[in-house]
Structure formats: C-alpha cells, structure tokens
Length: 321
Ligand code: ACO
Image (cartoon, rainbow, N blue to C red):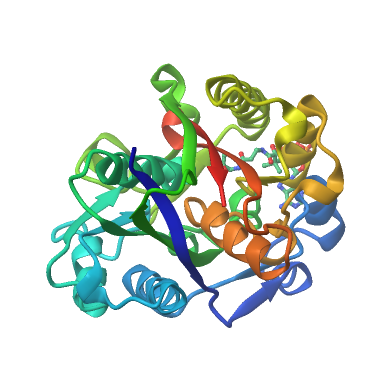
C-alpha cells in the first residue's frame, strides 16, 4: 500500500494588516460587533498576486521537505481568487518554483478547496501515478471585497499555505476523506459580476460578494459536523482518538458550534481567525502549518479537518501526521 506522507509545510502571510478599529474608520462598523459575531480582530491584505502568495508558501514547504521544484510531479493550487484564469495560476507557481517537470492545475471548491486538492493529490500518489506533489491554497479574497459594504468587508483576508506530499510506505497522511456539494443552494453564497456569465447580472462594480450569512452559518455547522462523523466511521475511529481539530476559519462561533457537536475540548482546536479572518481555501492550509509551528500538531497526531464553502461544497479529512 502506498501512502502520501506530508513531509513539508509552509505559509505566506502578507505583512499589511487592517485591524477592526482601522476598518471602522472606512466603513460603518466597530470592533465590538466584528469580534463578538465572528471572532475576527484583524486581517491581512496582499499587495502581491495570488500566484506570488502561492509561490512563497510552496517555496517554504519545499525547503521544509528538503526538496526543490525539480523533484515535484504535480502542483495543485486551490483558489477561488486566481491571478489569471487562462493560463491557470498553478502554471505560474510551477514556473516560479522551478517544477518544470510537474503537471499544474487549479482547483476551485472555494473554502473547501484545500481539502479537495489534498484528496486529489493523495489519490494520484496512492494510484502510483505520481510520487511528489505540492498542494497549495492561496487566496486574495480582499480583491473581491467592496470596502463600502460592511457585511462582507469585515470577514475576509488574504494568505497562502502549502504542503508537500511524498509517496511513502508509512501509514500516514490523508487516511480518511469525504467531499461533497449541495448545489441546489449554490446561490446563497456567490460572487456576482465575475466570470463569463457576468452578463446575467447587473454589474454594480468589479465584483460583489453575496451571501446569506445566517443560512450559511447553520449549513456550515451541520455540513462540517456530519462530514467529520462520516470520516470518523470511514477510518474506524472514535472522537477521543482525535488529537487536533483544524477547521475552516469562517467564524469563531461556527468553530465553537462544531466543537460542541463533536464534543472536542478547546485545547484540541486550532484557531487563528482572530489574526487573519476568512482566507477561504487558505484557512486550513495556514492553520495546519501554524498548528505544527505551535506544537499542537506533533509527530503521529490524529488530525481532523473540515471545511464548508461556496458551491455549496463541503469536506472533511482525517490526517495522520
Ligand atoms: N458591523 C456592524 N453591524 C453590522 C455589520 C458590521 N460589519 N454587518 C451587519 N451588521 C448589522 C446588520 O445590518 C444587522 O442590523 P439590523 O439588525 O439593524 O438589520 C445586524 O448587524 C445583524 O446582521 P446579521 O447579518 O443578521 O448578523 P449575524 O449575526 O448573522 O452575523 C455573519 C453575520 C457574521 C456574516 C454570520 O451570519 C456568519 O458568520 N455567517 C457564516 C459565515 C459566512 O456567511 N461567511 C461568508 C461566506 S464564506 C464561508 O466561509 C462559508
């Protein structure tokens, strides 16, 4: 049996920061509303492209694994804010990291994108098609943000995280996975005025993030909790076998509700939404990286991760570190 071991990890956090107080100076909101409703206290805004964010995170992950781009067979980029649509953004990352022999492909499953990409790359390694992959999630969500609209302006941020997967005989990496999509309700979360269908909308600006927050909140809690249950039973695990929960960071209250449903204590949950807001596909990649850096994830840790996003896509993963 071939497994896809995670041998490297890295992130790229843009240095420019906008705190809630600073945001309150340009749109009618306040730190109290934002932090109590979402847990967000600050977010990062990138002045470089999505491809550049992805490149830096991938370079850190490669260095961590002791590899160079030449060793890589596949670059899979999860993003819903690509630098370019044609050619794909992954090809730019492939070029920047010198992975000249690698296939390169973008994956768009919005906030679930990193777990979708992890599943895809793991399956290719397990099938013997490739030996090493860069799975990177990078987002420049603030590019979509209309700073005059407080409902969405407070929620999003930019950043990137990456992992290296390598074929291994050691039973570790992604050992349980479930992905899905409730497309019937895809309209409750979308970006208008963007893409080749934009003539269907009345353009009101360069792009417009539209969402029904309360409905998404409920769906996210239910979707992520149920997906975790499915993956636990698939992997033949009990909840108390899980050492760390690395959830998508969309709202602290969503994370707490999942924790409650799954009965997981605070000390086992990775939370960084206060610093970065919702970086869509990148939240889990960055959170995983920081959970390793801060010692929450240790060698052989059992990690559960779950995501929910536009589509409405959802995913859960059991990762043995
Ligand atoms: N500052 C101050 N007041 C605000 C702000 C703001 N930034 N935004 C909205 N309000 C006001 C509203 O106008 C409303 O006022 P009213 O009662 O006078 O009409 C009041 O606050 C309550 O607004 P709601 O939208 O009902 O607030 P809610 O408690 O639902 O919180 C939130 C909104 C944070 C978006 C929540 O619904 C949520 O987190 N939803 C899930 C996450 C989500 O949708 N993320 C975006 C999609 S991406 C994803 O990751 C799934």
